[in-house]
Length: 200
Image (cartoon, rainbow, N blue to C red; front, top):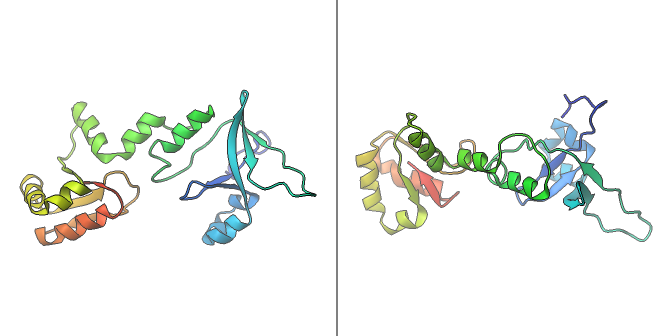
């Protein structure tokens, strides 16, 4: 944000919480402020976006007091979704922006969703005849119903060492390298604590 030419463009920072609440404020422009997130957000204003005619407006979520004037909404022309993880880079926020009719940079809904879902992405690569490692995709209910059969299938089809990971999370959340069959259940249960679909 600090690299943008502010002579040409007005930058409006927006922070999205894990609960999907949105905040804006000047302090969001300073990276050091993010060390204490509750304090930072307490110094920002809660906002929401609406489409009015051919414009998308950002409005504050504040209650209008007896002596307070309602704040002027800010017109938003384009969004730069610099985001990470679930509900952000998986097509969800792109869908929200498209619903608003707000242009944005980066991948569209489909490519974001496919890129975030590792099992679907592997199928796309295979269909395009691009080399990719074999995998097994497991649902929580399936694993909890018959652990032994699935563990035997994993050992036979994949072998050790192997990686267990949630299908659709970012970074290294819930990922474990498994060297032996004895380590497999703990790794699977860890990954399933984050999502109901995992990749082996």
